Length: 111
Image (cartoon, rainbow, N blue to C red):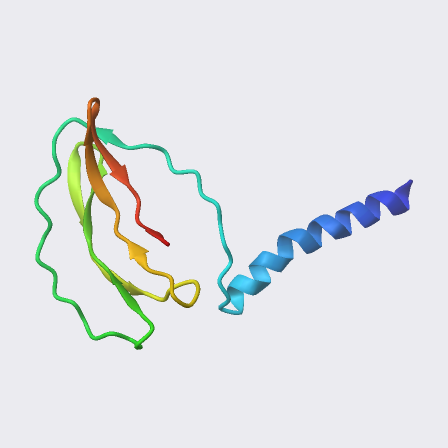
């Protein structure tokens, strides 16, 4: 009985440690996130003009900045460079979408 518990604990530890080890090694580890839908009643301000800094490598893709809601205020999130998770992946920008209940943030993602 005790050996089963020990074996189960070791398997659980290995399952938890493997993704963490890959992330530390710089590998892409897919993470499924549940994003709560953000709905606001007023339209976001127009996008800011950004100064795009030098590309770190030819593989990096620019992810433009966007407005986020923080309480009752709009807060600008600066753009940044990201490396695609796989060869040929393209960035689909996040955007605010107007719907019947208000404005909804649709997060950007790799396609």
